[in-house]
Length: 454
Ligand code: HEC
Ligand code: HEC
Ligand code: HEC
Ligand code: HEC
Image (cartoon, rainbow, N blue to C red; front, top):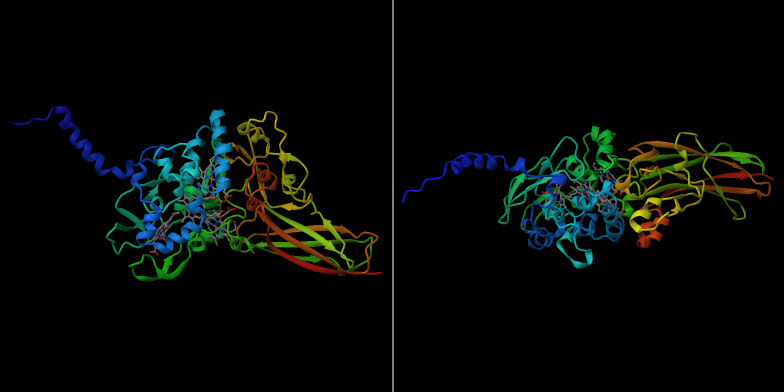
């Protein structure tokens, strides 16, 4: 029997061909990609690790990439603050799904929102996985931000070398994965209020390293001789999957160097000495701190110790620039907007800094729509002064010290110490975040000596 297609179906044929030809461009990205895939479209990291890439797998399991969903502070912030906030305040409703676009991208693509709690051991726990990154073909729009990567899962995996197809997959060389823009798709973030709350890639792009041809990879995925797969060749430049950042004390230590000097070497009690501290960011390709700037605290503490061992705290001199009050530690309250998700009406807030008053803080404050300081980056509408370190920037601080009349003769040792903390301590304590998240890390220190005369 002769089959004839109805005219409408015939008309659909060229349309289907057209759609097939343009499939990659049709792949949804960013918010629109929600629920467009299944978990089973992606291989598990374990599969990649056990079958061939054991070394990279072990590196990845030690990095924050593999913990972006399960890490306890992430779990607390998402489930205790972001989800309830999104359910109460329509202005931030989008983050209930959106947080996962970067932290649990496969759950986001599968439309599993909110994903099961980490303790359920679901596939959301894979966090930023091998197969998510290695199926990314590009990004949509002009600026990489808010998970606007385009992922096309399947047998083709994108990587730095086109050659050497494996029995498991086809390899395609990708210039995009090698670019800093790739990292920017998750390392730049705009809040629902249109504020740029994460700009690691944009800071890098404006800075000296990008101009000189560096990429994120040069500091976070360094090259080393080795195999990239168990049965593969040895390369001189195998891309290491370290992704070490704020959670690696070794990466943070020494980021900024500092040197302190006095204006005179000898003085009598009652006189005034001015100490100058020059601080130099020798290590980061972006600002320091970067990324989760709303959480981080970087501060300088200056102390003098007299010949008898008595210690005096030297507060930093004010410079007088607009917004300076957020850059000098003070006994004030902040973070009142946490009262909304936590259901605490008229929440008075928490101590803003939790460090000695008068210490200099190198930060940029995030403000909620009511103008109060916040650690909820999704609830951010504006910013305070940006007093962070740019790449290779030097800053100069001074501390003027009126020597107490009781100061004993002999050496007075004055030390400037730069500390770093991943999360403001009063916030960590209040939300029961594991203590290590708020542990002060000594970035660097330097001392100078003046002689106190009789
Ligand atoms: C010249 C080296 C260098 C380059 C280039 C560089 N970084 Fe970093 N990065 C560092 C150092 C050092 C640290 C540790 C200090 C810190 O936390 O900022 C760091 C920290 C980080 C952190 C953790 C920040 C935090 O506070 O949690 C992230 C995320 C990061 N880098 C991402 C990137 C991305 C994305 C790029 C490219 C757009 C990039 N880095 C380029 C050196 C570099
Ligand atoms: C955050 C994204 C990301 C994740 C997660 C990730 N990779 Fe990669 N991978 C990259 C990038 C970027 C490159 C190097 C691109 C370049 O320099 O051209 C790369 C390179 C590679 C290479 C080639 C190395 C070489 O030198 O030829 C292999 C193999 C690889 N990755 C496997 C894995 C495996 C296995 C996992 C999981 C255990 C994984 N990747 C997780 C981004 C990622
Ligand atoms: C799919 C989204 C995504 C992509 C693409 C991505 N990252 Fe990340 N990255 C994250 C998330 C989410 C975290 C935070 C994990 C956490 O602390 O919860 C992170 C953490 C990191 C950290 C560790 C920060 C710390 O606090 O220790 C570094 C370093 C980093 N990324 C570098 C890179 C570089 C370099 C690239 C590009 C080669 C890249 N990332 C691409 C999502 C991504
Ligand atoms: C555009 C991608 C993106 C989105 C959307 C996003 N994050 Fe992140 N998040 C990151 C990256 C990248 C880092 C790591 C930055 C760094 O190390 O400084 C991070 C870091 C964090 C951290 C700090 C982790 C640590 O250990 O210090 C928490 C907590 C967090 N995110 C929670 C959330 C929540 C909750 C949401 C939704 C309201 C969200 N994120 C939305 C990319 C994103």
